[in-house]
Amino acid sequence: MVCLGVDVGLRYVHCVAMDGSLAVIEARSNLVLDQLRQWCSEQRPDAVAVDAPQCWPLPNTRRQAEIRLMRMGIRCFLTPCSIRMRQLPFYAWMHTGMQVFSMLDSLGYRSFVEYLQPPVWMEVFPSASARLMGKHPPKGNKHQQRLYLLEQMGIEIDLLSNRHLVDAAICAVTGIHGLKGRFAAIGDRQTGFIILPAAPGAL
Image (cartoon, rainbow, N blue to C red; front, side, top):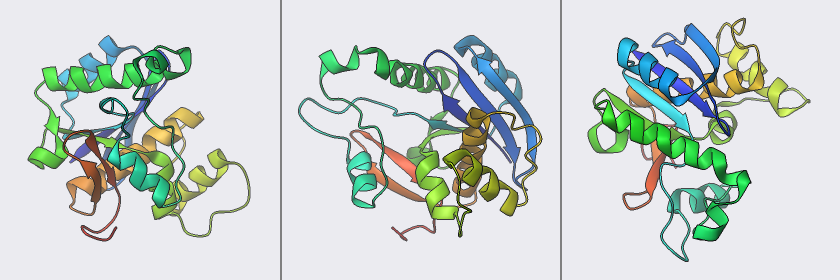
């Protein structure tokens, strides 16, 4: 069982491969889409957990998954429903993320919620995962708290050399939880689900 966690940036992605025992197999930063495609095509991880929205909301609406996160007290960048807003430079990373999902579809990966069996992709959100899995994090910045969380889970952090890889590792942990059936899905079929690390029906 292997999950590839993907943290999405403006132009590049940052990836951590993790097995079912939560051992970090490999970590790579600053990959372009073609490099990610090659990695997924050659290594064929069972799941790819991506920190980015999988689709845009309908006009004048919000994605239900994001509304649910906000109601849980978890802040997130709301995916814009306005076509004009989507063209702003800030949202370039969302376009990159949707390209990742499209690429995974072309390689035969399918939505985790729809299929459950590998190979699958899933949308995840490290901030939500860290909050749900975290227990009494130390004072400090977000990066330090997430490193502490990973260490508390027994995960070797030597290969996680930057904050993007730390977030990718949390994505991978969330994906492993999903593959093992310890997850909750929030959202709807129209605008997509976000997978959270929790017992089914817990949220």
